Amino acid sequence: MTILTAIGEELSSNKILEVGYDLATTYDEQLLVLHVIPKEEFNSHKSAVKDSPGAENFTIDREAQNAAEIARKVVHESLDEYDFDRIGPRGSVSDPTEKILSEVDRSDPQFPVIGGKQRSPVGKAIFGSTAQSILLNAPCPVVLASKE
Image (cartoon, rainbow, N blue to C red; front, top):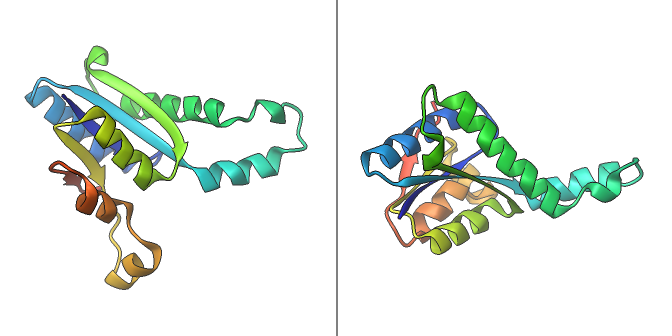
């Protein structure tokens, strides 16, 4: 089994990653660190660079590799000491909620660790919540780590 930690690029991912790594070491599991770039963000960037030199290299596969590199970078910047062999960075371009739930189904983690933004009930109803969707739809216990 593994511990799956879904992170963003922001520094608030540090706390989420610390919780995930602590669980992985406590339960002697691998830590899968997943960073998902929203497909809308990818499409927006692709449109912005479409006439630029090298735009043909801007592909979903390349951007997924970049997302995995972001995951590696966040691990390196967030954890003072860590066992690199215990950590598997992954990246994807997709809908974050769908990809995280898909990864939960695929990797069958002991715990997925996610962070949540503080929103009002109206904000959640209007904009949705990745964390809320994962909490409601994951087939296993989910750890919701505070981003502070």
